[in-house]
Image (cartoon, rainbow, N blue to C red):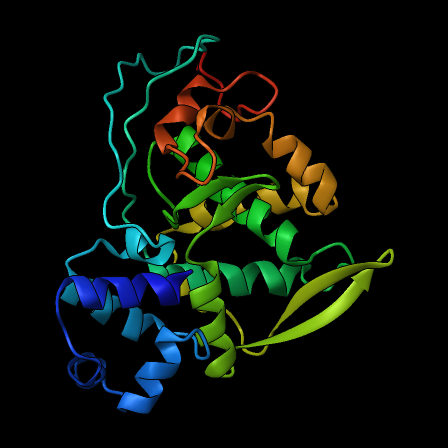
Amino acid sequence: MLAKFIQQLRKKHELTQEFLASKIGVSRPTYVQIEQGERDLTITEAKKLADIFGVDFSDFLQGKEKLISVKIEKEKHAVKTEKLELRINVPQKNLEKFKEVLLYILSRVGGKPNIGETVLYKLLYFIDFDFYEKFEEQLIGATYIKNHYGPTPVEFKVIVDEMIQSGELAKVNNKYFDHPQRKYLPVREPDLTKLKDARELRHIDEVLARLSDKNATELSDYSHEDVPWLIAESNQPLDYEAVFYRTPKTSVRNYNE
């Protein structure tokens, strides 16, 4: 999908393959492989292409030129049951921090038999969205889209592929109760200096203690009860502001304090 999107953008902007190859620092044959889906982009290459095409990086990774925005009228800390109109926010992502948080998660719980790729998606989601509800600040600030299995971080594949290529992660194809499972193993220690403060580390530990023993189905079902997922359109980003409309079942903040 991304390969076809890149090809469409190149033709729309009337750019040559030679030109784009030179701009991202690869040969033309290598660039052709990218457009044919035979070679994955690195984060650096993807960022350069997004800049050349004038597309927001998170939109580029999703194969979109622009997100549709609508207004939100909200009163924080109130729980509402009616359908909400939400403004889609483009989070302030910290991709280096994403790497270190992922490595930390894997160093803590990656050896558990249930921790495959789908479980990692949900752990990252709840780390991000729970932190935003509790502190009204972003921890990683990744973009999560709504799919059938729950929230999925759109940056995950590009970041993980780059980490595997650079020798920071190892990918293992496994089975969990006869179901195919993709696991990741950390090759290096996480750099915790990328975290803002001890509060962030404590929060990650709390989420892992609460959720890391659940399997993929349990976590997917739990995420399907969360308001950000419930009100999002299929394959569209989940809005961080929706955490302030969570029901008691998924809310992690005491609004009486």
